[in-house]
Image 1: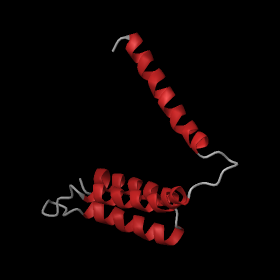
Image 2 (image 1 turned 90 degrees about the vertical axis):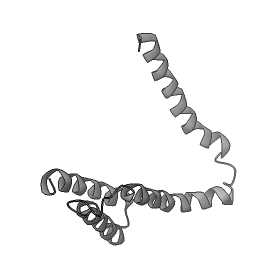
Image 3 (image 1 turned 120 degrees about the vertical axis):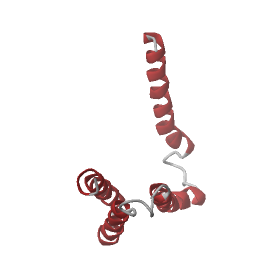
Length: 109
């Protein structure tokens, strides 16, 4: 990419991010009640995203391969256990990801 194309790409990304941040405040000002449907989405979407992440993570597991998907299932069990214990998606996903990377790079090589 040329310098102009790079600058245009960066500027476009900046504008897109700022628009995404500001639209919520424009659509739902502080003096107005947030619609019930939007409140429902705020409660339902985190679990839905977590479910999609699970499906995405296990879609290419090779059960018949050399390690039978052991790294994936061990990391998944740790994520479930941590989430049931701490109820914090950030910790659950972060620790599970780190454990998975350790397993595939150091243990199941």
